[in-house]
Length: 397
Image (tube, rainbow, N blue to C red; front, side):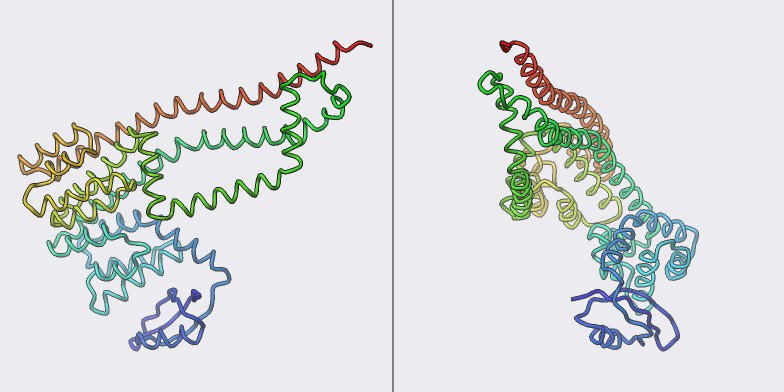
């Protein structure tokens, strides 16, 4: 199926724009007519990548949309008027189309949460459930404010980890390229000079020249095998068993980072949902979905069952043996005092700060380790070449 852009109008003269999936343009037109819309223009985008980029941009603007809508609702404006204003001031086409789709669904008689549910590629389940709870309690503006805080914190945490990984990635890539250039372009120039020396070359130089020759002769094959290995690895990780194995490996290698990250994610999500009025069982299901590590997620699946049996969540979480003792103690205190949502947010703040410090410590070890590794490899190459040069001077005239 292809993605088509369209402009249409309704019987009352409302003009809307959006995207629609269909096998061909005729089918797209028929689909619009079946929705009670009068197609004005239907065409395929010039390039689907453009559409994808616009949709990704809309996702990135979700936090801004939430904050602006919360402000307008808190000022006393009705929902449809607020959405109409956001559609008018939207800077990106994707954002404007998304808001117009929401406005259209609401004018057709849908609730706001139902309208959000029609765009799952933009609004995750946790977002929809929190809005539904806000609608039920008549506190939609307050819930959107909590959602905005939740999205801001989640993005900040993600950006923190991503920023910390930029330098090691650049270091590893540039080091690998440097080694590849040395093996394929620099060393072959010396090979002709050393070819007459034969067995008089040092062992390290022979190994280096053999490696250089293999890289020259089978470089494309090595690259192809590397790409194939990456592709197969990604395919394996995409499977359920592969993802479980990969997450288990990560948990073994960097357990401290993973546990702190998942504890912060789970507690902030659950605390935000409970504070927004979402029922405990539904909140637990949503909070479990934000956990990225499958090993950790599978370990706390019994928490929902325990909550259904009236055991609360502190005891089942303790039996799961995944979360740190401090977090479990604070959750237990929150249950006993009736302030579980507030305690969960405090746990999230505590472990987000701890995670940032742990990431800094990890980077403080990783960066020197990468520099040392690259230095040893390049140093081995340089020393091997110098030994070969010195061996020339030792040859009898």
